Length: 204
Image (cartoon, rainbow, N blue to C red):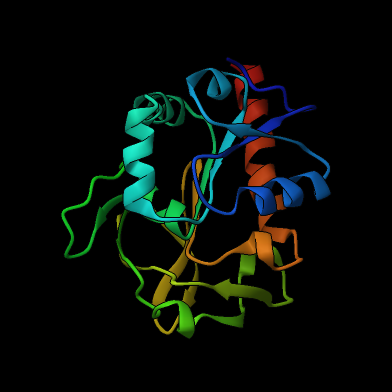
Protein backbone atom coordinates (compact mmCIF):
# COMPACT_ATOMS: atom_id res chain seq x y z
CA UNK A 1 0.00 0.00 0.00
CA UNK A 2 1.15 3.57 -0.57
CA UNK A 3 2.04 5.93 2.26
CA UNK A 4 -0.10 8.99 2.86
CA UNK A 5 2.43 11.60 4.05
CA UNK A 6 -0.29 13.80 5.56
CA UNK A 7 -1.89 11.15 7.79
CA UNK A 8 0.61 8.35 8.41
CA UNK A 9 -0.25 5.42 10.66
CA UNK A 10 2.55 3.87 12.71
CA UNK A 11 2.30 0.29 13.89
CA UNK A 12 3.87 -0.96 17.12
CA UNK A 13 4.65 -4.68 17.07
CA UNK A 14 2.55 -5.92 19.98
CA UNK A 15 3.77 -9.45 20.61
CA UNK A 16 5.86 -8.61 23.69
CA UNK A 17 7.72 -5.71 25.28
CA UNK A 18 7.12 -2.01 26.00
CA UNK A 19 4.32 -1.54 23.49
CA UNK A 20 2.23 0.87 25.58
CA UNK A 21 5.14 3.28 26.01
CA UNK A 22 5.77 3.51 22.26
CA UNK A 23 2.07 3.97 21.55
CA UNK A 24 1.94 6.83 24.05
CA UNK A 25 5.08 8.48 22.66
CA UNK A 26 3.83 8.31 19.07
CA UNK A 27 0.48 9.74 20.08
CA UNK A 28 2.26 12.52 21.98
CA UNK A 29 4.05 13.24 18.70
CA UNK A 30 0.55 13.66 17.19
CA UNK A 31 0.56 10.65 14.89
CA UNK A 32 -1.87 7.75 14.74
CA UNK A 33 -0.35 4.67 16.37
CA UNK A 34 -1.85 1.18 16.48
CA UNK A 35 -0.88 -2.28 17.69
CA UNK A 36 0.30 -4.83 15.14
CA UNK A 37 -0.34 -8.45 16.12
CA UNK A 38 -0.86 -10.19 12.78
CA UNK A 39 -0.33 -9.77 9.04
CA UNK A 40 -3.71 -8.10 8.60
CA UNK A 41 -2.72 -5.40 11.10
CA UNK A 42 0.55 -4.93 9.22
CA UNK A 43 -1.20 -4.14 5.96
CA UNK A 44 -2.89 -1.15 7.61
CA UNK A 45 0.25 0.71 8.71
CA UNK A 46 2.80 2.90 6.95
CA UNK A 47 5.70 2.19 9.31
CA UNK A 48 6.56 -0.28 12.07
CA UNK A 49 8.31 -0.07 15.43
CA UNK A 50 9.73 -3.20 17.04
CA UNK A 51 9.95 -2.36 20.77
CA UNK A 52 12.15 -3.70 23.55
CA UNK A 53 11.54 -7.20 24.90
CA UNK A 54 13.21 -10.60 24.50
CA UNK A 55 14.59 -11.21 21.03
CA UNK A 56 14.50 -15.02 20.86
CA UNK A 57 10.90 -15.06 22.09
CA UNK A 58 9.81 -12.40 19.60
CA UNK A 59 11.46 -14.18 16.66
CA UNK A 60 9.54 -17.34 17.57
CA UNK A 61 6.29 -15.37 17.83
CA UNK A 62 6.92 -13.62 14.51
CA UNK A 63 7.23 -17.03 12.91
CA UNK A 64 4.22 -18.47 14.76
CA UNK A 65 1.97 -15.61 13.68
CA UNK A 66 3.38 -15.57 10.11
CA UNK A 67 4.63 -12.00 10.50
CA UNK A 68 8.33 -12.43 9.78
CA UNK A 69 8.14 -12.71 5.98
CA UNK A 70 5.50 -9.98 5.54
CA UNK A 71 7.57 -7.57 7.64
CA UNK A 72 10.70 -8.30 5.62
CA UNK A 73 8.78 -7.86 2.36
CA UNK A 74 7.26 -4.53 3.43
CA UNK A 75 10.58 -3.13 4.68
CA UNK A 76 12.46 -4.19 1.57
CA UNK A 77 9.72 -2.49 -0.46
CA UNK A 78 10.39 0.76 1.41
CA UNK A 79 8.34 0.74 4.62
CA UNK A 80 10.23 2.52 7.44
CA UNK A 81 11.11 0.31 10.40
CA UNK A 82 12.58 1.23 13.79
CA UNK A 83 13.92 -1.32 16.24
CA UNK A 84 14.63 -0.31 19.84
CA UNK A 85 16.87 -2.46 22.07
CA UNK A 86 15.51 -5.96 21.39
CA UNK A 87 14.07 -4.58 18.16
CA UNK A 88 17.57 -3.67 17.04
CA UNK A 89 18.64 -7.28 17.59
CA UNK A 90 15.66 -8.60 15.62
CA UNK A 91 16.37 -6.21 12.73
CA UNK A 92 20.14 -6.86 12.63
CA UNK A 93 21.93 -8.98 10.07
CA UNK A 94 23.57 -11.09 12.78
CA UNK A 95 24.10 -11.50 16.52
CA UNK A 96 27.69 -11.88 17.76
CA UNK A 97 28.65 -15.31 19.12
CA UNK A 98 25.05 -16.59 19.05
CA UNK A 99 23.33 -18.70 16.40
CA UNK A 100 20.14 -16.65 16.56
CA UNK A 101 17.72 -15.99 13.70
CA UNK A 102 17.00 -12.37 12.79
CA UNK A 103 15.07 -10.47 10.11
CA UNK A 104 18.34 -9.30 8.48
CA UNK A 105 17.03 -5.82 7.66
CA UNK A 106 20.05 -3.69 8.61
CA UNK A 107 23.68 -4.63 7.95
CA UNK A 108 25.02 -4.64 11.50
CA UNK A 109 26.36 -7.19 13.96
CA UNK A 110 25.02 -6.70 17.48
CA UNK A 111 25.98 -8.15 20.85
CA UNK A 112 23.18 -8.93 23.28
CA UNK A 113 23.26 -7.49 26.83
CA UNK A 114 26.58 -5.85 25.97
CA UNK A 115 26.21 -2.99 28.47
CA UNK A 116 25.33 -5.36 31.31
CA UNK A 117 22.34 -7.04 32.87
CA UNK A 118 19.22 -5.44 34.37
CA UNK A 119 20.98 -4.13 37.51
CA UNK A 120 23.54 -2.32 35.35
CA UNK A 121 20.93 -0.32 33.44
CA UNK A 122 21.69 3.38 33.16
CA UNK A 123 20.60 6.74 31.82
CA UNK A 124 23.17 8.97 30.16
CA UNK A 125 23.32 12.01 27.92
CA UNK A 126 24.17 11.13 24.34
CA UNK A 127 25.40 13.44 21.62
CA UNK A 128 23.27 12.74 18.53
CA UNK A 129 24.00 15.30 15.82
CA UNK A 130 20.88 14.54 13.75
CA UNK A 131 18.73 15.52 16.76
CA UNK A 132 20.38 18.89 17.36
CA UNK A 133 22.89 20.26 19.85
CA UNK A 134 21.13 19.30 23.09
CA UNK A 135 22.16 15.86 24.38
CA UNK A 136 19.56 13.11 24.40
CA UNK A 137 18.67 11.39 27.73
CA UNK A 138 19.29 7.81 26.61
CA UNK A 139 18.01 4.99 28.83
CA UNK A 140 19.87 1.67 28.48
CA UNK A 141 18.21 -1.48 29.86
CA UNK A 142 20.05 -4.78 29.23
CA UNK A 143 21.12 -3.02 26.07
CA UNK A 144 22.94 -4.44 23.05
CA UNK A 145 25.68 -2.61 21.24
CA UNK A 146 26.82 -2.67 17.62
CA UNK A 147 30.11 -4.40 16.89
CA UNK A 148 30.11 -4.02 13.09
CA UNK A 149 28.43 -1.65 10.66
CA UNK A 150 28.19 -2.51 6.98
CA UNK A 151 29.24 0.04 4.33
CA UNK A 152 25.69 1.30 3.81
CA UNK A 153 25.00 1.94 7.50
CA UNK A 154 25.12 5.45 8.99
CA UNK A 155 26.43 5.56 12.56
CA UNK A 156 24.37 8.22 14.38
CA UNK A 157 25.45 7.78 18.01
CA UNK A 158 28.04 5.93 20.09
CA UNK A 159 28.57 5.00 23.72
CA UNK A 160 31.97 3.84 25.00
CA UNK A 161 33.17 3.44 21.42
CA UNK A 162 30.28 1.24 20.33
CA UNK A 163 27.39 2.14 18.05
CA UNK A 164 24.02 2.63 19.76
CA UNK A 165 22.01 4.37 17.02
CA UNK A 166 22.27 3.55 13.32
CA UNK A 167 20.34 3.97 10.12
CA UNK A 168 20.42 2.23 6.77
CA UNK A 169 18.02 3.75 4.26
CA UNK A 170 14.51 3.17 5.69
CA UNK A 171 15.64 1.21 8.77
CA UNK A 172 16.49 2.90 12.08
CA UNK A 173 17.85 1.09 15.15
CA UNK A 174 18.61 2.25 18.69
CA UNK A 175 20.01 0.16 21.54
CA UNK A 176 18.43 2.54 24.08
CA UNK A 177 14.77 3.30 24.87
CA UNK A 178 13.64 6.74 23.60
CA UNK A 179 10.03 5.87 24.47
CA UNK A 180 10.95 6.05 28.18
CA UNK A 181 12.89 9.31 28.04
CA UNK A 182 10.14 11.92 27.87
CA UNK A 183 11.97 13.36 24.86
CA UNK A 184 10.29 12.84 21.49
CA UNK A 185 13.18 13.78 19.20
CA UNK A 186 14.03 10.23 18.09
CA UNK A 187 10.35 9.52 17.47
CA UNK A 188 10.10 12.69 15.40
CA UNK A 189 13.26 11.74 13.50
CA UNK A 190 11.64 8.42 12.62
CA UNK A 191 8.40 10.15 11.65
CA UNK A 192 10.39 12.45 9.37
CA UNK A 193 11.79 9.32 7.68
CA UNK A 194 8.21 8.16 7.20
CA UNK A 195 6.99 11.44 5.74
CA UNK A 196 9.93 11.63 3.32
CA UNK A 197 9.31 8.04 2.23
CA UNK A 198 5.64 8.89 1.74
CA UNK A 199 6.56 11.79 -0.52
CA UNK A 200 8.78 9.50 -2.59
CA UNK A 201 5.96 6.96 -2.85
CA UNK A 202 3.47 9.62 -3.87
CA UNK A 203 5.84 10.92 -6.56
CA UNK A 204 6.59 7.47 -7.97
